[in-house]
Length: 255
Image (cartoon, rainbow, N blue to C red; front, side, top):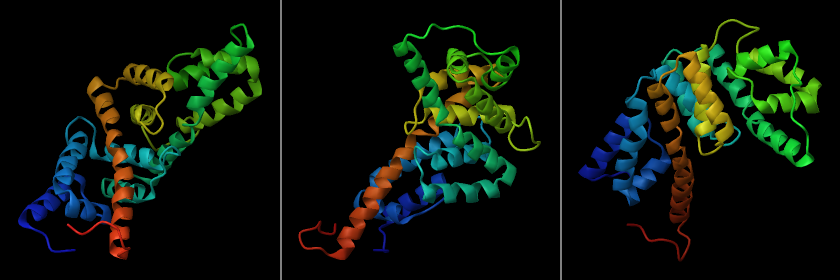
């Protein structure tokens, strides 16, 4: 169905104005539940339009969220890579984001190592060298207890881990993201429902505040992740429409 009522045309225009794209799943929802699409457009568009973050950084955050191993949404990633290119994002920026994404799995390793140490009865102690502690502070703006635990359990792993994190934070190569931008992307990843990690979120928020990031910037970065749940709706809407178009007996009648 491509013919729209006046109301549907207005809703479609509103959606494109707010989100910048139109897809088969939006067409399916427009057909069956147009007011949902209308209110979603306003809800999802609000965080991108209200707040201090630049359009460039907003697109980088979306790239991080869509490419995250906890989400893996290629359609959204392609959309936001296109928007990011138009916003002046460089290849170095994109690959800095993807490097941050590659470190996301560590958040749960840190939690798991802490649990392992507690259950194994490991007595906590300072195990990092002065150099290791300085490197840890550069990455976290503090010295988390789980890094001392890591040094106790496997100092070799800690060394290669710090090498990886330092390269991600631009210690070995120029260009790419500014430190405040990195912190905001890290906060967005830790706050998003697809990979929520309270321990890391608190550390990243503290580190961002120490870096000079404002509360308003942090709030906007956090808000940007909520409407990724629409990707489940998109899957359902597309699959529903496919079943209707297939004309399988007993399936839903057209509205």
